Figure 1: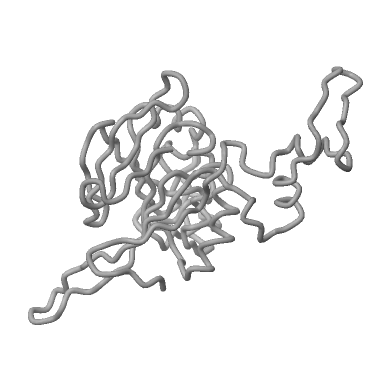
Figure 2: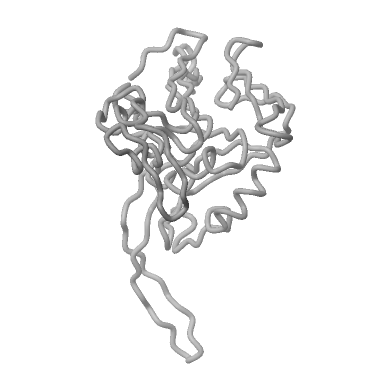
Length: 261
């Protein structure tokens, strides 16, 4: 468990690289022992080896390996107990901003190193691949159990048919996703199966027919203040290449920590 000073939060950088991540594919595929490589078909010349990318390629622990930009904010939520006279219970929360193409690698590499076992909520800055393409893997963060479900199927004949089906009982809570309307529209187009109503074998017991991520989407304004498990967050619009608008976030007290992708 990561130690967090009371009334503050820790920030773990999960990625600080470009949208394609580092090492760069071209820098690896066209390397030629330090000499310039020429593509005979396109007549394009490629630069000499990139020392940074080569070192990142050959060293799994290299700091030159850079994932898509993302952070995890770790803090203690104070949860009041039911019984009088008892102190409030601390519950560690992990909120991730952006889950791009390298989310899985970042989580596998960094979360165990710092004793982090779960993600509680996700905030998205914009709808590009380097910010949202990890959404499909959220299902791997939700604990499930394979169960058998006995069902009665209505048929056209006078007798009903009893069947036993295999389903996925989701033991985790649905993942809360905070994003603006523009990003939600992109998510709808890219992940229609994630935004559709889940197909349950047993909705009361949260048993899914298909194992997909259970997500709760919360639409926020581009300029708004909201809180996640008691942590105050303010969103604000920023330019993200040309006239494309992304969201920045001020976390905690005003100006305490600002994230801009």
